[in-house]
Image 1 (cartoon, chains in turn orange, cyan):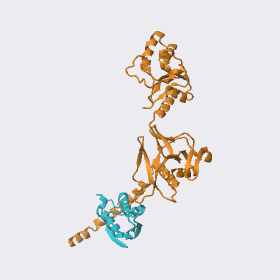
Image 2: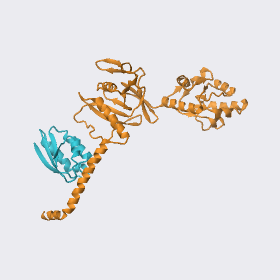
Image 3: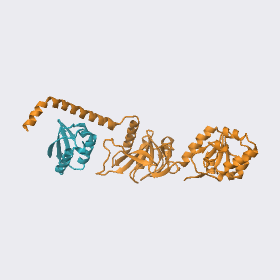
Image 4: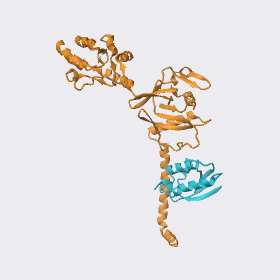
Length: 331
Length: 88
């Protein structure tokens, strides 16, 4: 199970969440192990049997105002009970202040209190988004990710097959690069989010030329920080007996982190303009998303034609029934 | 060059699936391969061509093969028609 420290979280989100540290810096060492956020209303009221203590605890106006109704003597055991459950940290929204006794206790038990100026709902949203990204399933693969007409197209295939060259051609044609060679994918909000494997900038290796910097060469317009992966195109050497897709009625998928991604196996041979085919494949997928499937349309037309002819024949057959009977008799 | 007259025996005719099978088999051979129906002649290794024939059940087709392995090609293809492309 992945974990980060409260300090990692604080350093990363200090600015976005308008956070300040209320307790001592030493309290930042606790670990966050859950991607979820909790509002501990019932735990504060004394019900701690079911209490998602491992989550980040967000105190909104409800919690703070409720705690303010108690005097220090009754607050102390109540909060001690909550803190004994080993919560990672407390985030107080709206810039509200907790009673001093809680701050004292938190310092004593090494639990950080962070204060955010944002509204409770806003804190909740930002926290959830951040934690889901941090705790998302992820993997890194050898591939190139390009944005083609707004679709995230993952180019895969053996080293030297021409992924980078294909991507370069696509960039040249006005599409943009997310990353070359190493792509990190994360499962976020039911999608596969692709990013460069290393945040070094938009470098590419072009055989025979060496490294190039796409951002410097083509401008900021031709690069993107991240992109959901919508389809994969596997480039492969042309093989005589390989069963390549001819009509497109059967769909192929590959699975990444449990997400099914449509895949196209694209034979590459000298003189073949792969980038145009990648563009066409992307456009074809867009059409299908919009409800038009060329393969189905074509197949329906063929079907209708076959049906029409069969019907005609049956009409003829019933008209010629007598003749047929005569034929059978002859046999 | 050799030719062979065959009849489409499967109920649905030469729709997508049988056409794909037929083309896939034909491309294994080196010989040229054509199919004729009602005066229309298509390349038997092109799936669009084959489907465009829209050959219905009990229609007559003329298979034409030309090349070193023409006999084997026609044998295998007509066997597929006979087996109704494993349909019905």
